[in-house]
Image (cartoon, rainbow, N blue to C red; front, side, top):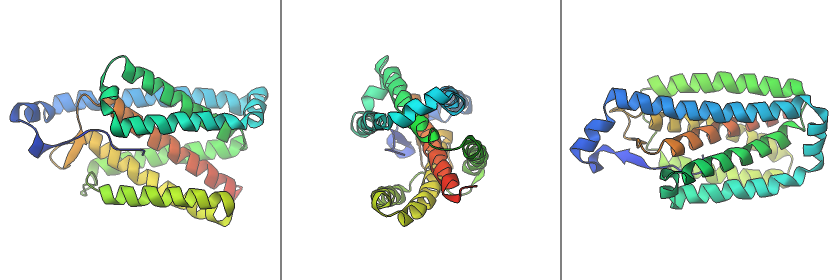
Amino acid sequence: MACFGKRRDSDRRDSDRRLMIEDPHVRRKFIVKVLMIVAINLLFTSLIASIVVFYRPARRFFRRHWWIFIPAFCVLTTIHILLCYCQQLFRKSPIKFILLAIYVLAHTVLVCIIVSRYHPKLIFIAFGICTIMVILLGIFAKFAPCDFTNCWIFVFVVSVLLMLLGLLAIFFKIMLVIYVAVGVFAYSMFLVIDLQLLIGGKTHRNEYDEEDYIIAALQIYHDIIELFKMLLICMGLLDI
C-alpha cells in the first residue's frame, strides 16, 4: 500500500455531507463501483499474465528483456508519489482514468516479468492461495470487531521494515525468506485496512470519500497484486 488516499473523519464534515455519505444505499453503490474497477483491472492483468504463462515466445521475451521492470517500477513510484502529494489529480476526469490505466499497465508488466521466471504449477498455486486469502480477508475486514483504519504508525513501521528487508534480500539470500514472510503479512493487513476504509460506516473511524473511487480501487488493486507476488516468491522458495 503506497499511500493512503483521502479519508473522512466524521468530526470534520458538515452534517449534510455526513448524512449523504452514511446513507447505506450511497455507500453500497460506491463499494460496488470500486470493486468493479478492481475486478476489471485484475482481469486485465490476469489475461496478459496468462499469455506469458502459456505462450513460450512471450515468456522468453520477458525473461530476455528483464530490464523492462526498471521503467515500470519508476512509473509506479511516480504515481505513488502523486497519490501522496497530488491527490486532486485522482479526482479529475479524464486524468484520473489515464493515471489508473498507466498504473495497471506498469503493474502488469512487473507481474509478467515475475511469472515468466516460475513454473506454471507454482503460479496457479499462488493464484489459488491469493484468491482464498483475499476472500477470507474481505470477510474479516467486514465482520472484524477491530477498527484498523487508524493504524497509521503500524503502516509506516511495517512499510519501512519491508523496504529495508527488500534491500537486504538483494545481497543476502537468507533475508529473502524473512522479506517474503513479512510481505505476506504486511499486504494482508494493508488489504484489510483498505477494505475497511472502503466499507466505512459508524464502526470505522476513517473511510474513503465518495469521490475517491479511483484512489480506493488503485489501493486495493495494488494490495492484491503485491500479495500475489509475495505468495509466488514464497512458492518458489518452497519449490513445491
